[in-house]
Figure 1 (cartoon, rainbow, N blue to C red):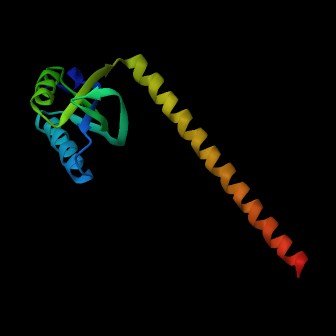
Figure 2: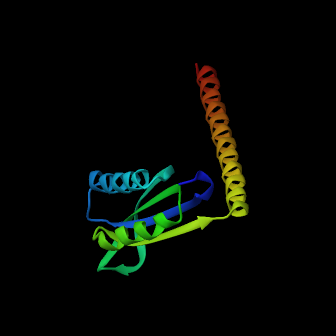
Figure 3: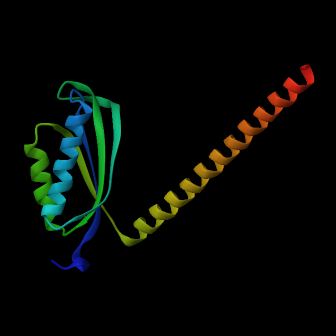
Amino acid sequence: MSKKADKYYETTFIVDSIFEDERVDSIVNKYVNFFKKNEGEVIKSEKWGRRKLAYPIKKRVTGSYVSIEFTADPSVITKLERAYHLDDDILRFLTVTFDKKTLEERNVYLIKKEQIMKEREAAAQQLQQSAEADKVAEAKTTE
């Protein structure tokens, strides 16, 4: 398969929350290996953790959310969704594709978000240092 034919996708699925973290990791690894076997490339894999569902699914009110970003040939998606349907551990899934414009906008957003987080961490660190300096100065005045 040609790399030019590959598209950028994100798949998000909900795993039954009764499973331990090790079992969720094995399910994630199973799908990461699925992409590798089908000549796809996994860009990023994230576990979002257990969250409350908006409505009960298969009599469950919580689920473990997992997101995998990958590039692959479009024919892989039908195989992936077939695998999801056959897997009893997956409660729900959604796979979306990104066009070039959306992907660029998303990357810009993520870069801005990362910068804001760094600025907040730096501000919190400065605040903590000034609070420590105030404590040291107060301790010297009380001696």
